[in-house]
Image 1 (spheres, rainbow, N blue to C red):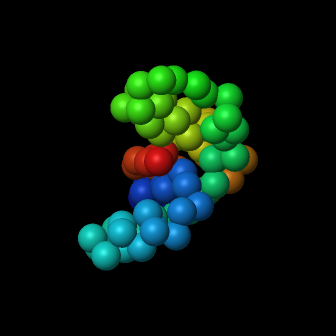
Image 2 (cartoon, one colour; image 1 turned 90 degrees about the vertical axis):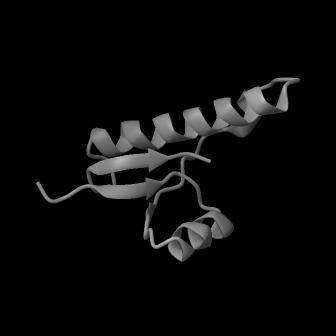
Length: 77
């Protein structure tokens, strides 16, 4: 197996460009997570939950071999 990759679990162009500007060239895999399935009156809790759910969704597909390289890190945001 080759070396791991940094996977961005978001199709956000702004997030991808921010990472690239920091010298990180991620593999982009859209999480396909339904953000409307999460509700919270607390904005911090909402953002944290959404990020975790997106990262878990992408990581599960990658680790099952459905897509993408074996990651070192999956960032959901």
